[in-house]
Image 1 (cartoon, rainbow, N blue to C red):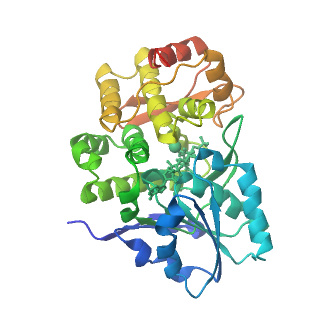
Image 2: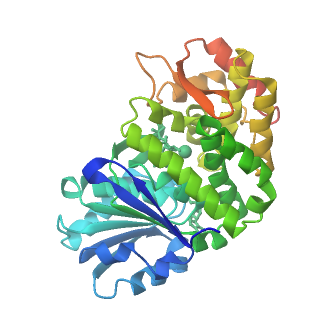
Amino acid sequence: MQKTTQQIIVGLGERSYAIDIGVGLLSRTPLFNVLPHQILIITNTVVGPLYLDQVRAQLASHHVVVHTIDDGESAKSLANYGAIMDTLIQYNFNRDCAVVALGGGVVGDLAGFVAATYQRGVRFYQIPTTLLAQVDSSVGGKTAINHPGGKNMVGAFYQPQGVLIDTNCLASLNDRDYACGLAEVVKYGVIADAEFFAWLEAHVNQLNARDSGALTYAIQRSCEIKADIVAADEREQSVRALLNLGHTFGHAIEAAHYDTWKHGEAVAAGTVIAAKLMHQLGELSAADMARIEALLQAFQLPVRAPKMPLAQWQAFMQRDKKVQDGTVRLVLPTAIGAASLRPMADWQVIGQAITAMSTTND
Ligand SMILES: NC(=O)c1ccc[n+]([C@@H]2O[C@H](COP(=O)([O-])OP(=O)(O)OC[C@H]3O[C@@H](n4cnc5c(N)ncnc54)[C@H](O)[C@@H]3O)[C@@H](O)[C@H]2O)c1
Ligand SMILES: O=C(O)C(=O)C[C@@H](O)[C@H](O)[C@H](O)COP(=O)(O)O
Ligand SMILES: [Zn+2]
């Protein structure tokens, strides 16, 4: 029997924080008791109308300002960053204020970067409302905005002081964005936990039906895996890079197709390319490659990348943050539950995997 509220600690010494996970937490919140008087809530035009009233009701005695951004990946922009800074200054926010992100990964990444830099850093809290944000982006302190030249090119490592996950929020999420979250869930199984991967395979129907028990377990296990990795390597000097499985390819797809490809979809297609590459090198079995592709497909995720010239892939991939001495480093699965970070200088080999896993008619 699962408890109605779970708590996972991200252990980072004096910067440790709790992830609270539960049904209906927005209206019975552990987090709101600790917020300071001045609060900036950052949300967007979709999430605000759905959940802002519930959050505001908990904050009746606080001075709350709301900044609402447009929907979509293009909102993770320098222009919105500047506009939010204008709001903070216009309302005379002090260093003892808090920034609260209410939304998906876009809102969370942007709000986190605002919090990291306003007056050199103010308190930051995450209330993630997409599955992707609940299992991944709200945890671990990667904050960023995009640049036309690449994803997350400007940002900071800046941990939140708390993460509040209300699984009720997922009821209003559309199927496409729900599937995007599952792409990052599958990632945890591939890189770190074969048992969890097998559990996901066995619970495809429950997860596709958003069964509350299955979903809560998937969120909890994902957060546990991410919390452990972040605690071991906060600034991506080693093991944290594994959380980038599929992302070097995925970010290239996103950067070239912000309007049509969502992050989780691009990560799914990128993960299949990574698996294919490893299979080509004889280091991932055909059976494991097939299981990865089948699970992503079972969650309604794309498993083929859009057709793009190799030069375009290369241009974006060379800007990946894991590039070292000019050489791309890729996270590559060696088995279900294990992956490693490899320098890969041979673009012919990379190109072969990309071509094999790209659509023929896009
Ligand atoms: N910082 C990190 O560690 C990290 C990890 C993974 C992804 N990311 C970033 O996160 C972003 C993707 O996040 P995302 O998938 O949440 O996208 P998103 O924030 O764009 O949200 C997806 C869609 O769902 C809507 N939405 C949000 N909550 C909703 C709800 N409860 N009900 C109905 N609609 C809702 C949003 O308005 C949006 O249209 C990308 O920018 C990616 O780079 C960051
Ligand atoms: O937390 C991490 O570390 C991750 O890499 C999580 C990823 O899912 C996420 O998309 C992250 O924003 C990618 O970061 P980047 O450093 O490749 O921009
Ligand atoms: Zn991601």
